[in-house]
Image 1: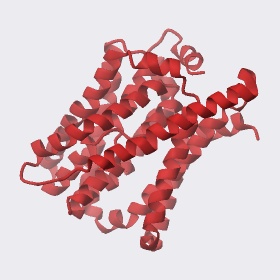
Image 2: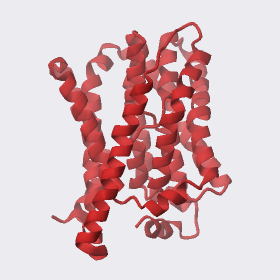
Image 3: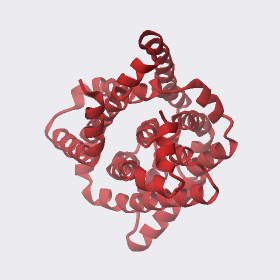
Length: 341
């Protein structure tokens, strides 16, 4: 199989395949009874996420991972943006939306919850698709999950002092072990094995297979997310419409803000992509679990519909990576490609 040709095809038509996956998932979800398969789908979701992250981890270089851990400024910006600035942007977005249309308090809490949770493990894949610093993204994901044990309940207490929302520490720990640490260990072991068996040249020949597999995994997880949330979205169309307004404001503002700030403070392109995706992209699965633990379906709607805009916005940023790299000038596109190889 020509993996490079397949990878280029999947990358070129990425928006098309994502849109088709969203439509297909919504259609299946509204026409099929998925309740008997709840546990199976939960396991399938986790396996697909792992299958998407694992190939990216095969290209993980331990030397670069150690170097990324020393990038204090980048780590500080990513964590500050993801755990502090992002919730404030959403708070402003809700306030603006409320001026046009009253926002239900529980829906507002759900919107805030969707943004205060740690970044999604999918952001590592997005970083890889844009030739970004996967090692830095991996560290940020790990740290954000760890810090979320404190930051999530803190933000919920600030924004919703009248509501008691519990958070499962084990849920956060288990998530990071399954979707980040496990694929990273398997990826490193696989890289060592392939380099020893095939040599550097042989490894380079099959290297395009890894992002191709990750792309197919991403399309699959998009389908599964919309399939499972289809009935909830369809049952509350007006509330969904209201929820989408602050989400659109958030993603537009956050992506623009991160691009301008990183460019202004001199963050290198590869680090910028890692910072941006891990700061802006959120783990809606974790948000859904927390909302459901709180015992309110209305609060859970916001994180359920978050993928409707999060995926297109982040995929759009992925698709525009060459133009964004051009903002850094100095032949950055060529430097990025060679630096990520």
